[in-house]
Length: 175
Image (cartoon, rainbow, N blue to C red):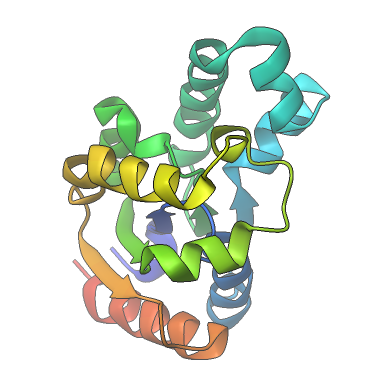
């Protein structure tokens, strides 16, 4: 199987650069780019914060799994997932079936810096978002550990991260 027969999949906490890095990696590979969160917004015709507010997280996760299943069945794509996609093992199994899963991880301070001005982060609409980031990272650790490769993005540029991801993908996509 050549690399076009597989997908490059980015998982990780919000604010780790999955979408920015995914777009750049897709360009470097000549692959189509898909952002699962954007696809959910298109499907529901509303932004994620409104989906959470109007329907709740459980409904959001159900739609997320449907969208993940749809796109993970295709190939030749770079897929950026939402931060909570890992909470459902079926999502990761679907993504891994035709993909190489790379976790983008960052220090909590870096995540906070990256998301602090974004008011469309429903899980961080609280009194102390930094504490919430640390809490969520700890609660999700076992889920984020379910990956093929990891890149710590804390001290790298988007270009450096995308290059690393593409290298990992190319070295591991010829089965």
